[in-house]
Amino acid sequence: MGFPIPGTGSVTEDTAVVGGQLQANGDVNILGISDTGLWTPAVISGAYGSQLVINGNGVWSYTATNSDPAIQALNTGETLQEVFTVTSTRGTTTITITINGLDEPPCFVRGTRISTPQGARPVEDLQVGDEVLTADEGPRKIVWIGSKRVSAGQVPDFEKLQPIRILPDTFGPGIPSRELRVSPMHRISVRGAHAMLLFGEQEVLCAAKMLVNGTTILRGQADEVEYFHILFDEHQVILADGCETESLYPGRVGLSNFDRAAQEEVFGLFPDLRSLPESYGPAARRILKRHEGLVLGQAFTPAGLSDAA
Image (cartoon, rainbow, N blue to C red; front, top):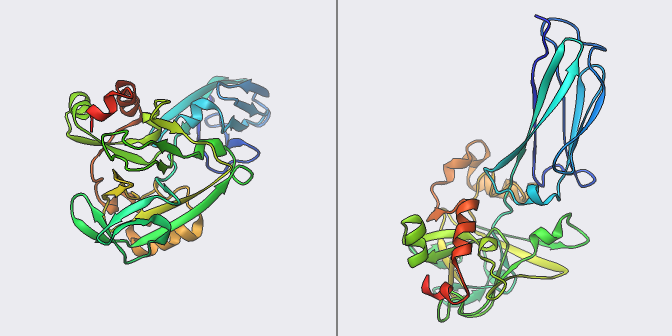
């Protein structure tokens, strides 16, 4: 009795950002007694443009800079932690803050041509019920398609959402057949020697931003971009401008950055996703984690990219 209890809190990248800051609040306690006035007020600096403020009653608030490079480098499932030591008249304890990573959903830029049984069609012309050619199951019908326009003046950290440009023939002749532009976390199918050597797989899905090499795969620059999302009843690999890439993989992660109306549309199609994100089913291919994607990206050279196709 009478000793201070450790506290915890958490924030999530790009979520509930206020004035560019992620925020968490809490109250540490001393076991078995009233702790009013027993804590030492303090302002403690953290590592991510962050700080923890605690008052004499143990009530604390935490803020971190959402645009901090270490936070923005996080992918879903990855975390950072900060541990702050706070003091009371009954001793010290810690407050541990977990910073959770979050991916933006995979998207195609307006103008991307998607392979269908009728030929390649601009993504913006596709509708629910249209068939798209998939790598594993032939023609499959689109069950939902959505779009969102984002601009520098509208979205905080717009730089993070700039499209990745994949130049023609990057992965081999005609792959892609023209410049392909996708969102940074849109996963591209990588086949062949690199995939087998590094991961023991003939084919893996890797986020486009992990493959940037400054020559054939580049970070784009635009004041505004319109992204489109294509959803099937199962995760699929489809052809976009002649390059194999993924459809939307929903769930808590895949839908987290959608507006409420778009989320509700998808929940209407897949009700179990609301409480059980895993219910959508498995990914079409092995999805590389961030550290694996970085290894794959480092293994590629402009000449070597075609060797992996």
